[in-house]
Length: 168
Image 1: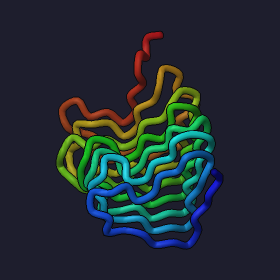
Image 2 (image 1 turned 180 degrees about the vertical axis):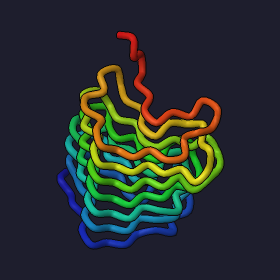
Image 3 (image 1 turned 30 degrees about the vertical axis):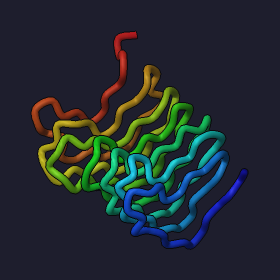
Image 4 (image 1 turned 90 degrees about the horizontal axis):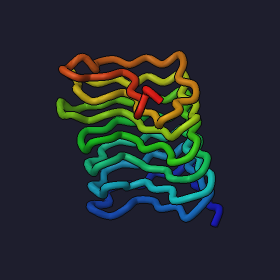
């Protein structure tokens, strides 16, 4: 089912998933907030789009997760206060452009994970404390990671860019 939500505000969902897409769907200019679900915004398959959204007050594992084959995460403002990962961008190829990701906690919360051959460009990943996580975690073949700014990953073991199995 191809569904796109535009100009929407949704939140205060407690432990429930806010939005779950079955396939090839999108969020455009939406504000999504306040959930403790592990993946409150979840795109299961296909190509998913998140464009110009404001996501905040998520306290589950990820602020959002897209598992589709090709995902587009563009020009969003995302504030995360807990969990382990702000965004899980794709098991496939992700295009992550011009996002502002703020990690507003002093825990080991990391920025974003993208699959192999993804494009990560023009993003700011800002941690308000000396974070020991990573700003960007990429698969075995990172694709192109260019012109990003990573701030605050200066704790013991903190990394701006971390690639799985980099020696391959």
